[in-house]
Length: 519
Image (cartoon, helix red, strand yellow):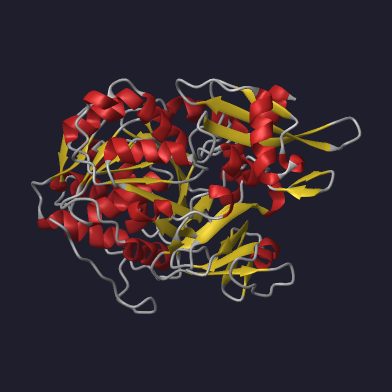
């Protein structure tokens, strides 16, 4: 059962946040199971709705409302999902304290956003104990019995046994919905403001079709793209199956057991599924969509995935500042550009993309430059950083910092990040230029290109490579492969064969860690 939903115009006094609409959707079919927990507990719509509303009341009793900030130190739990919606319904600003980030980075985020409340679920109690000594003591509450603060789910202690009538907190579409943060792997995480109107517009324009009703497997953090997919699924009348973290055997088991129709994966995680011995005996006929993105994917691996799962692969390209920008449908995976890299697609609904040169002028099709975009879900700016906002946002457009080109049919191709250029003798090289070539080699399953500086501060090109199962490859073979297709200047001076490539908290190759390990 799919659900169509709309909203008042962005400037309307009748604006309703996505969470307000979600309460209506949940109330329409109270007995329908909408969440399945990692412990296989089935949560009906009425229970999720009631839990969310009681959390709103508990938050309001603590002074949480418009103009305040709540930091979520949570994982993939039904309580965390309810808290996400409750903070939105209360009109407060939502901030996630991401998994994997070190305590020092989390402390920086807490200092910068000054939350009135730190809300913690049972999966993050250890992170809380490491964080609290580093920050001014905010009020702490837990989602379940915990070592500190009050348990907001203890409805008897909170005296919230009254009928679960929603609190109607008016929000403006221009009010902050959340502050998202970049991964911080290239420095201090940047804080990105997204408004209620921007996020709602993003959800409406995505219109993901993945079953009727959809059944989404959240096996990556709800604080990232999986949270957006979960919101879409619930708004469409579907169910969300939660797992604490990605584990390939558990994912395949859930697909067969729960008849999963959709999941979001980073390419390295998709590769783990393809390599798992349980895949050939798992019934994956229920899967209608696998959305992937966040890092390069090997064409050979994508062909393998299409053979295993069928024509269900969809690629998303975007960033924290813009949310989704482009999408590749299953039939568009044959659209390739220079050196055989697969397109990242054409603009999603409501998205505009142009390519500009260093002077800010648009360039013709096929010409490389910076990708500049505007989208329904793009940020309103960086939190308390007007100078950076003015640098990145120009006349309603976001400078992505990514280099790419559009072909004559409007397909976008990525080259690399502007600030990731490696300056070797003879000119600058973008790592993804070399990665795109290496990934076309049948023996290469994953790769990451990075630089190593010598004592004279001269940069040298290196590549970390994970070989595909059943393949052997020599260092000189890969160097010659790149040279034949791009020229000697692009051939890595060092090729390092690894069992795995370290990744950042958002699933991208961690070039800093590679440099430290291999240089």
